[in-house]
Length: 269
Image (cartoon, rainbow, N blue to C red; front, side, top):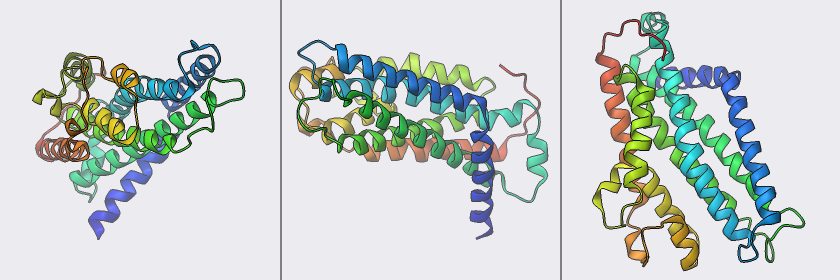
């Protein structure tokens, strides 16, 4: 019980500190920019694009593919690696709290904050696209909001777990995060559905969850997965299990390194 109380106490303190972080306001400004994009797209989109298609495309490309990975990994690295850079980890390690509880608490706080912020963003995007005068045909499908909110939140959990491992293990975790997102994930994610390398990415299971949860017409499905011309339902697999394995393995590696390493002062990037 003491271990759990320590973990949640660290998570609570980290969450409160994050709420006062100026970078959080930049994230909210970015979401407002996405809101403006949704308003403009919903008003001036080509006639063949209805509101539902716009929401699916913008929700995936803006939030699931761009904001979720970059924001989640950046915040996680700042929270975990910041203590190592300025050497305040020495004071944390002297307290009667296990290192694993410290790391898990920080990860929980970042995952919760990023997941909530991204879920709010996709909800605001839906409101923007369904405003009077938009191209939404028929009654707005509000059931799309929890689908995208849950998917982006799950992506944030996975990305923060990977970033936590990078922050605990590498001297320049932001560089490794950029290599993972640009050099690995963005290249592998567009391989055909049968390619096994995609299991080491987060973007692929996230997209599979959306494919299974949304009834997409062939043209819209190709917009989300340009390289897959003949999508079949049996190709979905078990994306939730894939995400769970990524989270568990990344956290296990991060905990193993964080609990065994002797950190020294590291210059800020």
